Length: 366
Image (cartoon, rainbow, N blue to C red; front, side, top):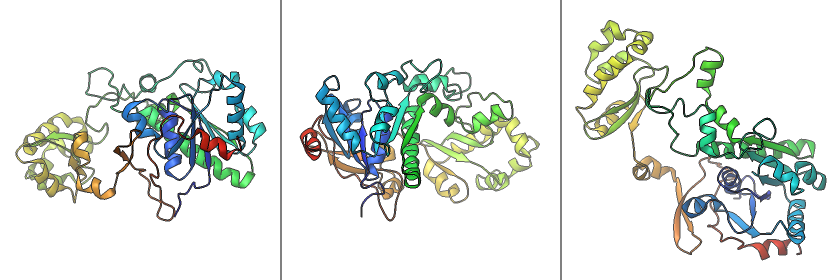
């Protein structure tokens, strides 16, 4: 069985992390992704290996007429073109959406920028941490009063790539009806703002300016992180506080006027969390998980190295092995969406820069 995007050809000129994240997702779903560069695939090191599997690598010098001609030949037979240059660069190179769609009207042209394709900041360089700060994410991450905290992954990069992949697939679907491609674009800033989600709604609708809450949920009491006898645990008491109090051996808490209803528990959350923390410290994490997990959302707090030893994570098959650029086997993440009829796959390892230049250009008769 082939992937859902089998037969789709993607020409990928992106660098860094956001664009290669988009093309990796398309590649995992079966697309033939051809990375066009001048010798470097993405960020180097392990992250380059992480982002570059399932792709073919072609080296072209776009400062030369022959290199541009080869790129145009690729575009003429492509379904998707991806770029994440600053907005003005594509026009200077003659690779704007108008130019490429004039050559190939069925092309889906995908772009990621730092701040959008137009507007007062559009020509600025953009990277993940800047978008996290300007998008409000750093203001709501971390302990109360600690000052802005960066999310521990390049979240606006990864989500911008994911949003663009979603947009590209939707544009391919629209092309089936209209017969025409289109320009699809997003930015790191828009992606970061979109991630605010319910926190944005609290401001836009309720007029509440969200603040840092640490590991506490902003609006749900008795939902957070607690020490245990041998580690830490996350617990979410979304309903039936009385049942939770009974299970942890403190049924009296449900009769305490400080914790009588949700509003009271929110108002007195620090006191409630202190009581719960004292109780949870008396037993190991796994005992609490075994006791509570069938009734309340809960789970241990892992280090990254512990994540991949968890039996459910292992059962889900979230990693596989491929050939690295030096021939050794390396372990990489699989695609997180399961297609039962047309499954995703990791079909090939990490290419060396330019490895497929002759192969791909030969397919074009060059």
